[in-house]
Image 1 (cartoon, rainbow, N blue to C red):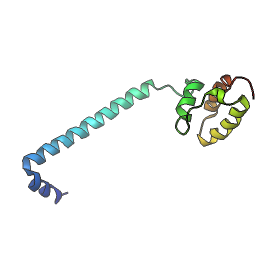
Image 2 (image 1 turned 90 degrees about the horizontal axis):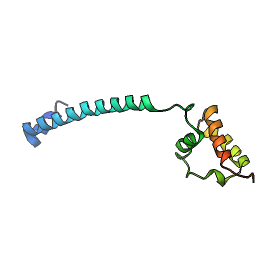
Image 3 (image 1 turned 180 degrees about the vertical axis):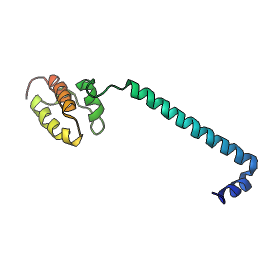
Image 4 (image 1 turned 135 degrees about the vertical axis):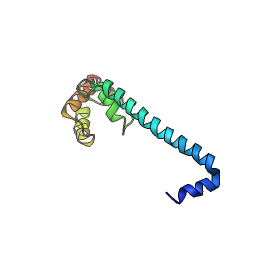
Amino acid sequence: MKKLVPKICRVIGVPGAIVITCAAATWLILGCAATKQSGEVAAGTNPTAVEKSGAQLWAENCVRCHNIRSPSSYSSAQWEVAMMHMRVRANLTPEEHKKILEFLRSGSGVAR
């Protein structure tokens, strides 16, 4: 760091180095403050998995790796097999698994 500062001062001059230092310090201070505030807001308003519906959990979890399919794409039995596999793969809690499966079964229509 001791060698870097004189090099920067020679290239951009002392006034330029002061401007860059002030800009970096401002960015650091405001960036940390903004992150803390948004974290506080998010922590205060995000519902827990217990409060979320099966549809919300399905949309949040499955879209990470899959194109969203309509619940009517598969029968109730097919969704049950898929959810048994994905419960482990997606690290779903028993409550999340139950709610997502209920949602998918409710929209699957007639068993195929």
